[in-house]
Length: 489
Image (tube, rainbow, N blue to C red; front, side, top):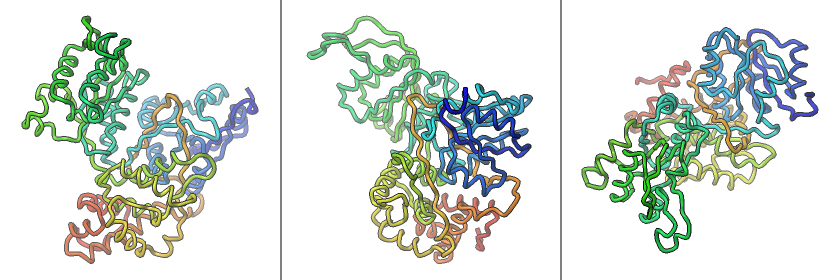
């Protein structure tokens, strides 16, 4: 197949071991893949804006993949990564797939057929990708644990505040499990009247009640072979809790008005923002059901306690609003303000703020003036004070572009998950100022100003609008980057 019969994919090529020769490049051209080779950090940072896919060569480990994923996330991109690995390094290939690589090819594979299969679904100029953000170290730990739990069929209970992303984690559990190709069915137990929840879950036979003109399969039957997600299970009425417990124990159900039993093959994931143990004491939740659904508990932290996820989540949310043309950009000042806000409404509130910013911007650049928070005090006080804290050189730094992914009917999940460490690459000339470095340097100045103007770290954190734990995390992260705070810990 020649290049004229396929969509041309623009690939950024990074191989720290050997350059690609003309013959191999011609092979990829025949597969419809145009290459842009890079060798420095500065070149890669600029090239990512134009890339449909990034191709990297791995050596004895998948460390370079992690570093590249960090860079992609910090820049707000959602570029899929394809890895080339030596045939003798099968363990590296396995690690690369576990870390979310789009595909892994042998380093000596050049056939057009193999490469066409590897980039299948990347229809330029639109990317068929689906991504979940797990950039902060706390989120990375949660992702690793969730992927282990996903390989078993145990019932999982997801615990965390409203809007923190419990349904996203439930989908990660499903899509990382052997049931990934079967249905994922969700029900919010707090959003339906009691009599409708029972019908929704268990279904009914024809004639079971007035208006039941035909049989109806409930969500448990619809999820056969897959996963059912019961959100806000703490709001389920007590009488339905008893019926749910019986279904979970026997793995069978009876439809309303039915006499026969129906066998079930379903994995159950439940979620709640309530303290179920307190609900048990108050006789609002059954203790036996609690122990049935909480075989494995996964706790999702509030967004303010995982600050490394904030900018990538903003980029992901902005990308959904791109309907063609230029992507949105987020100024360094706006990024800093977003990271400083405490996010009481978590990810759900972040998405609302992004939507408002898109409306208010009237263009493609998001600045602090376009950020309207639910906390009125933050709008009136924090934003002006933060805006005056920017050095001139940082205010003139380039904004971060956000590409626009689209979503296929059954896309493979991409986990934006990598330790927050700087990428190490061979450089042939001085790279331009790194955007993340500029933002972090400015962030340090703002943090130190708050510390120096208050009597304690707790007061400084309150002044910055972040938790003391987040402040400690930011200071520790700055020390690892070689930034000195000039004050005692």
